[in-house]
Length: 501
Image (cartoon, rainbow, N blue to C red):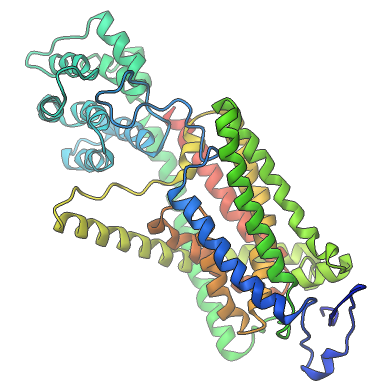
């Protein structure tokens, strides 16, 4: 059981005692003061608003590799560069590889519709037309290209590219000459390569590299889908079992909430958020003075410095034993550390229904946003972008290693210490731990750079991790579940990027 702690701020620092235990039935305040606790909550709200501004509206130099992307409009720019390695490019590559094994035109049209929805500029629509020609035929491509051409000014750099492709998709088709093919590849990267092999035999090595491998992808996704289905069924069973055990009183939470009045945990949250904001500002400053290729790795590397937050209580006069007990960095259940890791795995599986519910909410929100956009006379809503995809889609080994380590090591350790170790503990002084898991999950989700509509799964996961903290008392199970989830995402992204090329 957590050591009883009671603290008063004195000139000599924090004085830890156990006199409060008798007054609160075993619950004692964390070190600090009630005044600092209230001030800390106010600071946290203000810092969270700043973080949301950065994550949702600000541009961070650490947001992704993105040093090789093209102009935003594709028309009137001085140069057209190959596309960024992003979600839209992966979608296009998957669509083209699936094309030969999808004889049904309606199935192919679904992919094309997704690309059309993501096309926000003439350049995007031009590139989407190439994929439409590959999957749906020459007429579909020509219709899109004619529309793009009609909206371009006469001196647009994209004009000669449109003219060359109109010939490729003519009846009869006019193959690209070497100069046109080179220009398209130099300007449009993978899309230019696809345009250069349209109409060639599937046995052509250059074409086979781009459009082959669909059967392998289907087999891999089939295996992954089967594993996901098994995990979902097991998770549903565990979820129902947990509800029944809780209802019957068999499953008893081990987390001992503190009494109200302490401030060190909320101070930790504020220091972490302030450090996060500082890191964003450093990234923006670095972008102004350093080469673009150096800024991202530098800021991601500096992010590891935020791990020092775990030692903040030591600066406030607490011992390491008291810090460890307060944050749950122990394993006192049956089986020790291995037992907590096992509980983390079971808890993650049992949380799958909650995660799926969060995903469904995000889908519904996107659907409603799309309906509103169409009803108000605007274009269809573009598919939400996941910023994590860009890191892996770049194919840059350094980026993949940095982001993979950040996702599987840094995030489970630091985020769990801050949100489930400190914030949930502080809020549990005012409400039940499970109820405290709700605002903790909201703060956890809003700290991420995902678009608002994609936050459903992240917030749901945060709630699951909070329930694990309430169940086990130890933070080890939360760290394990977090690492499992992020590790699965990393493996999936590396697999997809490897298969699509």
